[in-house]
Image (cartoon, rainbow, N blue to C red; front, side):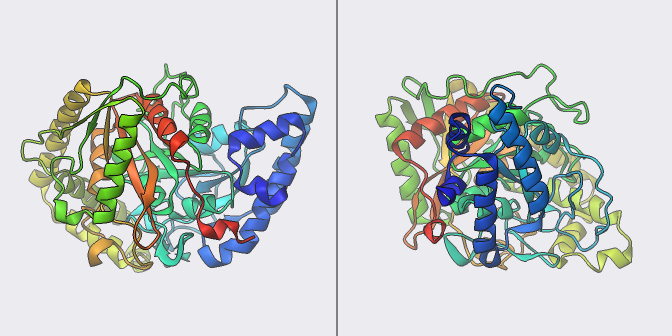
Length: 473
């Protein structure tokens, strides 16, 4: 039973708590045992605090034993939080040697605060590349994080530590951040469900270097677990100027309604991605997943938005490179010498973009958002591939031998950071080497619950598999 608790969905785990057939202490010990077994191979954590986790688990256990006194539906569930999220009492290093190893870390970011208030058991902080600058996870500070489906492959990024942990039961839930796909890229590469919520739906503070490109959301082994997490973290916080003060939605409501009668667009290229850049196994798996939605009663129409010549890759590059230029400028020459050369190169490119290029990108982003709003006014949802490829080797900055300065290798994800719409990924198959493939499900603004409802419908007929490594204990 103990080993099973670590891989159990949170919604099933809390049922056992309620029935007194398992306890938060047992679940936490199971997660810690898996950390001992798998973290040396995967390198998913930048900080662990087993003693604090067990103290929190014992407190949660007392609440469950009292009956009706629990703090939330995920009270007592072991969880991990990405290094980029400020967490009281735990180091937040941003994956960077340039940050102060002594903190102080005296305040919780909104998500960390909500999860603490909900009674979750925080196991530790997971790895990220320096300031989340690339879609893979390695840094001079913490080293490279590996993919649980195949050691030697990247787990994706920048939330790569969280997915590596989640996939093999080193925690039953995980939090990631997403500025160009950093929740969806690693979830696609490691076969998990991940949601980039509507911008502002989950409050984000301190402000990210990537400004309004940045989102924060759940990474889970089931869609229902993500909905349970959203019920905790998608709540107003005055520290985020874009937070929604009237948002009290129950994301579990209607989760099982299915997709019958929904009008869904399917865009294999999103209107701008070159077909020869999409791996044939990815294209085939996504096409097969789309057919599943048809069998579930949705009306699926192949259609792509008319982007009027706009290329989201160019728009996002201008945003993120100029943002990084400002970030790096705040560091002394001595501190910059400690930073990732790729990050410094991106900052240099951003510093030389010029005012016209940056302002033009801002205007184009607004135009793109209007186009996507109008497109999703015609449909309930949009389906695309999540990534054009599957996980490649660790210690590469990008796919296809890229240096990471051009983030265009993840075109399907970055588009919806620009438009701020909810977008999720769910695994839809494996490639010829046995590596996971992701299907992206996109909704109109604030239709996060509908996105998860569609993902849940797909999951019921195509359950999310665990990597073979997860069974080696």
